[in-house]
Image (cartoon, rainbow, N blue to C red; front, side, top):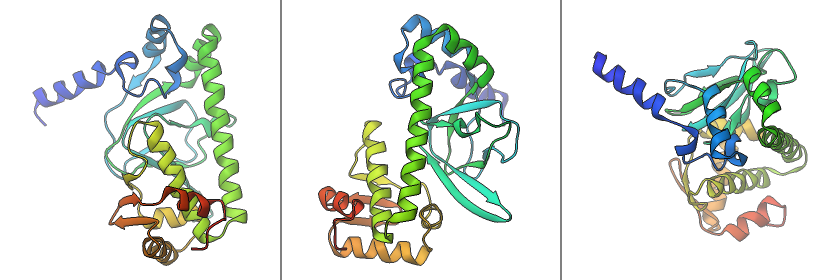
Length: 246
C-alpha cells in the first residue's frame, strides 16, 4: 500500500475524537463535561479497521481492555469442548469485554461481522480515571448493569420461549437497538448470517428459515436476503411476549 494512503488512514484514525463522535451520546462519555471528555479521550487507543472475520480478541487471552464499537458489528463466540456457541452481537456504541472484568481472560473470541472500527480503552487507565470522574464510573456501572440485564433476558428467552417467540424477541431487540442509534427501527440489514442467528437462539438454520416464512405469510416481517422490514410492529411485539398465534 502506498505511503500516502497509509498516512491518510493513520491521520483519519487520530482525527476521531469523543467530542466529535456521533455516538458520544450513547457511549461511556455521555455524562461527561467537555473538559472531562478530553481526559477520557486521552486514554483511548484508536485501532485500524477490522475486516470481516478478523478477530478483535481471542478466547483465553489476558484481559487488558474494553472496546467501544464505532462502526460495523461483531459477534462473540464461546468454544467449549469443541462446541461453538454465539453468545452475543455488538452494534455501534456498545462495549465489548465487560464480561471479562471479573476474570483474568476473555471468555470468548470476538469476530467482525463486517468492516468494523473500535476504540480500545485500557481498563487500568479507565479504572484510574473513573476514580477522578464519578460520572464516568456511574456510566460504566450502567453499562455493566445493562450487560447483566441482557444476559438474564437471553436466559429467559432460551429457557421458556417457543421458537417463534425467540425470533420475534430477537427482531424487537434489534429494532430497539437501531432506534436508540437514530436508525430506522422498521428497516435494517442483518450483518449476521441465519446460521449465527440460529446458533444464538438455539435453533436450527432450517427452523429460522421456516419461522421467517411464517412471519412473512402473516404480514409481520418481510425479508429479502439480509434486509429486514418490520411490517407490523405491534404484532411482532405480541409474538415476542407469547401473545401471538404465528
